[in-house]
Length: 241
Image (tube, rainbow, N blue to C red):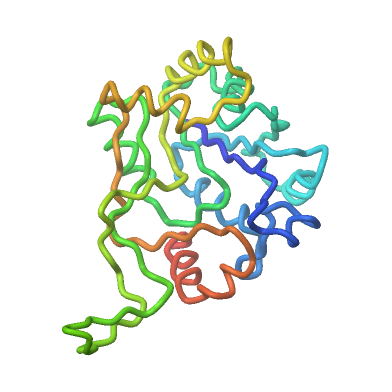
């Protein structure tokens, strides 16, 4: 199986940091964010190749320079500028001969068990499986209030969400490439979720792999890393174990 890391976003939420380096190179611990993801994916023996998609002609060149000649599993593909689904179509030749692949958006940091997720994907006979969660650790404190009186304080609790939150880690059947190819005839900029998975979900072909209460964080900027050191360190520890 192959894994694709989408690292081509312009990182609008991370400005002004991303004026100087891509989001994938945000420091997490003593290594760039993408280094942790590559090492984690490489720890699964069945993942034979990792394809990184980014704007290597721009700031993404820093990613290529960081990994070049250090990891033979990695291949680099220039961002096509045709959306998250369009990028997958752009690298379809590299996925030839594979029945499914892992897709990981670079700003997601979580020790998701890819083996269990793949087994779940197979069990559900889905074309796509998305990592989801029902519990979220809040960044602020809460209070239990009764008739205007605070009875108890809850410091950054884990709360149950009314709907499952979709995280940026997927297992996709290569059959999805044909769906993208059909859509690309009428639309050039294709979003994976809205233009492709939405239709498949209506046909009950998209499964949700619940990560439970495992910590996950959206690394949108260095500020997020700084504010959530304890969670980040916990995730990195899990990714190494």
